[in-house]
Length: 172
Image 1 (spheres, rainbow, N blue to C red):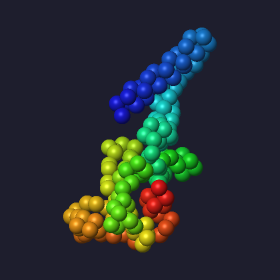
Image 2 (cartoon, rainbow, N blue to C red; image 1 turned 90 degrees about the vertical axis):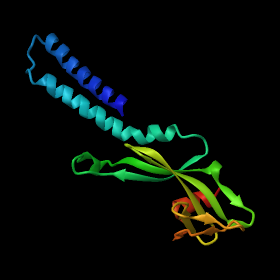
Image 3 (tube, helix red, strand yellow; image 1 turned 90 degrees about the horizontal axis):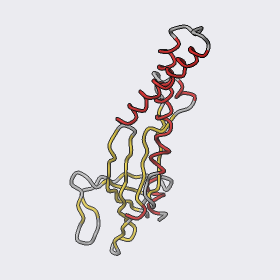
Image 4 (cartoon, one colour; image 1 turned 60 degrees about the vertical axis):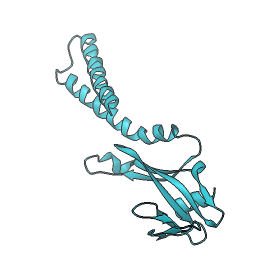
């Protein structure tokens, strides 16, 4: 975030500098307000470019075996251009290499779900997926495993076979 701020400030200086050079070349014919307007436009352009490129940059740095399962696009009234072209500001991915099964409960699989956000730290959530019944449960708040490997005290969520977490986990 700090480096993006520095980049935005430098973009403002660069655009202002270009206008100042153009003003010098044209013999001072450009209006004085052009320099701060160019600086502002440069900083806005840098911010927009950074917003739209975040998802691609982050996705490209994911380790091998990480599968993006869902993207969330953002639109906001204070960014009117996002209604025409929304950008991805958060997404979820699973670590296909972390999928574990228990021989006693072969229909259940345990997978690590990662939640990425534009201005948020990465969150990691273990999820149990039942590939036979198309349901899943987050391993949080009191969920335990029984001696036979079954999940106890879990809040199961019934989903369809096309649920991105079920589809990616059971397809591994």
